[in-house]
Image (tube, rainbow, N blue to C red; front, side, top):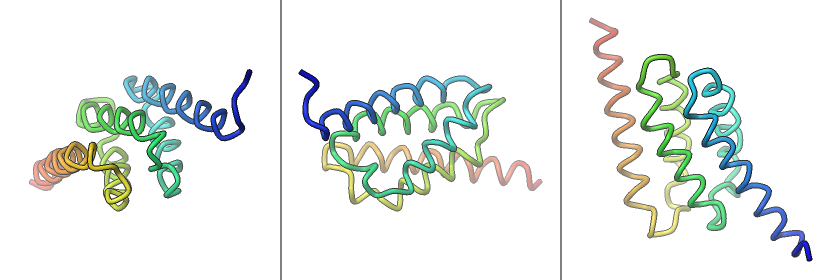
Length: 118
């Protein structure tokens, strides 16, 4: 049995988020994956509970790798900033974690801007 259309939708989106998460780890595929995730996150439905764990996993990867050489820090921070706009949509279970992610990423971004400026 394949499940309901909604269950199939949830499964398909979670499988895609897992693929995106893997692509975010590689500097060669980071930009395309981050842009896809950015587009996905512009839709408030992306923040529904069935996708939350995989979305947070993707955001964790973005916050970790975007500051490394070969990755796009600006794109990573833009993605985290978009998600910060929807932070109230995260369940209480993830609210604290996402806040830390966003703050850490913005701190790194500001530091890099200051270094590049001087």
